[in-house]
Image (cartoon, helix red, strand yellow):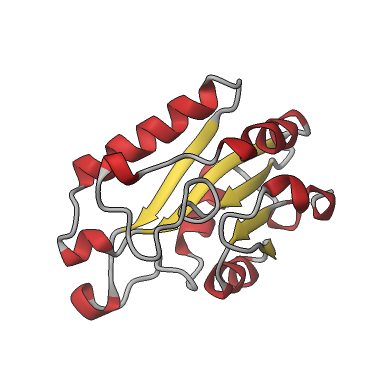
Amino acid sequence: MQKNKAVFLDRDGVLNRELGDYVCKFEDFHVHEHNFKPLKELQDRGYLLMIATNQGGLAKGWYTVDILDQMHEHLKNEYLKYGIKITAVYYCPHHPNFTGDCDCRKPKPGMLLKGIQEYNLDPSLCYFIGDKVTDVEAADAAGVNGIKIEIDQPLSEILHFIA
């Protein structure tokens, strides 16, 4: 059976505007419109698009799963308007100071490994784009190609790194 390929994307600072801390309210969640065209190009090249995001604000009680789900539905719907399908959204609800250790909080690879298994992905054909060193560390631990960008950097500037 042929393996699939995917681009995993961090959320805050990559797909939506970084606020410097957690995005706790739906009205503060602003999707980066400059990424519609590059994500459509990646999808057209045969990549599944998946989100892998730490959401420790849940463990801290700063927002609820309902608010988080509302943000993710909005994100998926905004991209869908441009023919872009977000295949999966993985999030880690844990925070080490509140819930202890887990296998999903980046830099651990749990979210990426879950996507690899659920969607029959070949890790060597996959990428993880994030704005933190922990994103690249998670990519390395999962056998995925990591690409670190600057916070809120347009993805069009790094498309040449993706085969």
